[in-house]
Amino acid sequence: MSGDASNTSILLVEDDQMDIMNVQRELRKHDITVPLHIARNGREALGLLRGDGGQAPIGKPTIVLLDINMPRMNGLELLDTLRSDPEFVGLNVFIMTTSDLESDRLKARELAVSGYIIKPLSFDKFGEGGTSVDGFSLFLDLLKLKE
Image 1: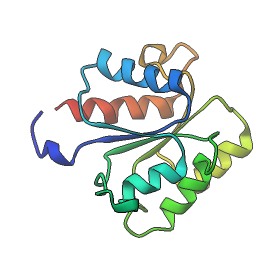
Image 2: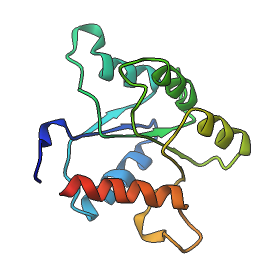
Image 3: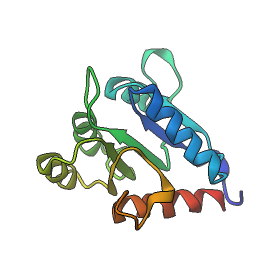
Image 4: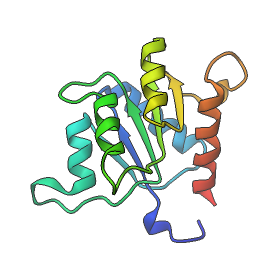
């Protein structure tokens, strides 16, 4: 990979182990080998980003993949917090959810998400009525990470 690879990473905020494994498999399948940081809920993600509890912060990720339905702090609450923090306001965030509720989509749009992806995440389903155009923009952004 060319450029400054040390600044390239993905933060996956997801509480379901099967979905985590699915994302890891999809990244491997497309030879995307940048660091993948995993948080199980919004609070854990904030801890990673800010370096809470004496831990060093992970640095600003290139892409955040964010589940909506999680315990302790859900994805939309985390996104709201990130958008109000000057350090993280511009993060490239993609919502990943099993929910196709219009209210979730509207809230995500209000919070300036880069894309909204209905799980399960699969880059092979583009154009087949599976993942949306928003998901395709994620795919393109992930492919740029390979360069």
